[in-house]
Length: 299
Image (cartoon, rainbow, N blue to C red):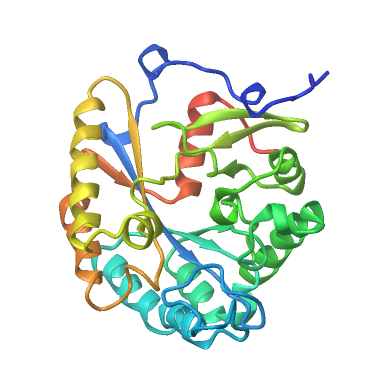
């Protein structure tokens, strides 16, 4: 019988990383790097999820908001393809974190990622925080079905827009068929979350190596993105002598995909790629490795 899950802390046990069973990686590797690219669909007849310029004086909000919509749209038309070329140059696949409506608005992006061996994470239907969605459960099922229909593969992972959940989100995610969630940014290893429908895996996404936080909110220069990623990698690599570590970094094409920032994405791959002690994996590969170690079988 599943006990009542009254608080988020009821879903996850506190186990210090210094007191866990080993999570060995194949081929003697010590650290996993997980690159994510977030492709979103901003609906033009609604207020924009984020802005780079304020509305004109005397106007509280502007719909349609052409300047901010176009700022984001550049990422899909140009920025994504600039980032994708860097991934291809290093022969690595990433995780496509996508609104399900991207299948309709930008199908070429989805198809290119599938051809290159990427995996997918559901990221809402359009870019809207889950607490603002009237029927969240229905939307989660719709996301799962739409991505599966377009790609021919069920999306195994989920990241909520702005990482925002309600109390029942992970229950509905597991019910719909999602196997891992990335909202719970609280560890350097996968952890188990209890849901009403069984155990769901939490993979460690990132706030610290997230270009939205670093560039738009904190106002750092683009070089800080690569500098911080390299510093974090070196620290985690040193700690991985005791326990395997995972490092996620996440990119939005309208931010790190612009011309003056993209070279710093390349700097990260120059530092972490083609090393014997590193695996650059998709979320699905991380999940399969973790489930294999735990002896679980997919439902």
